[in-house]
Image (cartoon, rainbow, N blue to C red; front, top):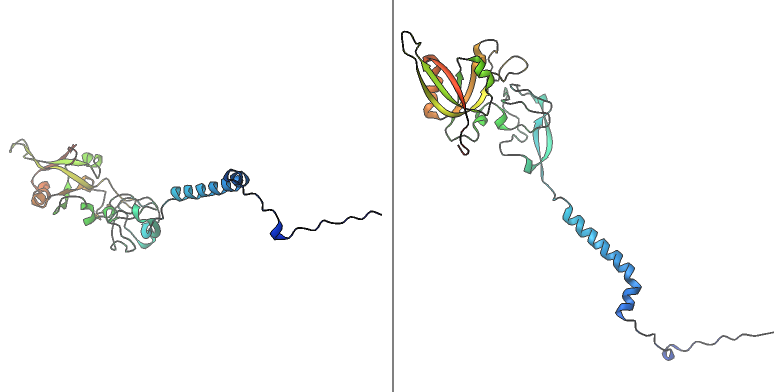
Length: 238
């Protein structure tokens, strides 16, 4: 029978210390762990840089459906929506609805914020010189009135006389005034935003923005002769 005897271990204080490993050896041993850690750090930094900044959202009134120009706004025509504040220009209604009976000066698509500049009233004069007023004009030629649109600029011309008893005389009453609304902008119910029927000569009605000093002469022009407009292209900055 063979007997095996285990060699007793040396006491700790008599053991030979393990040799120290160099930095290269340590890197070779743990390089996979270091590579994985660096990759995770790089991914985290990339996500931080590419992630969009947190935007502040506000609740505002928007159109609940497509609303044609001239629509009288009712509660069921509006709803609230959360929209980034940066996308809402000044002049919005927030959560306070427009005054009862307000009508749209332009068509508004569903989901679009309702702004004061979209509703007939002082908001239509936004961006014009202080003291500007909205002046209704009835053009002698309804076909001309049907061709012009809100946002265009026109010279307003008054022609007095009939060419027989009195000599024809034409003069410009206002230059490069903006059109705010035209009689061609009618709601589907056959009523214009100003509450007048579209079945008569109201089709020649337009509204322009003008200075207060010339508003009286413009507003009474149709009583003194024939009123016409000429489309103009004002210089940039005018």
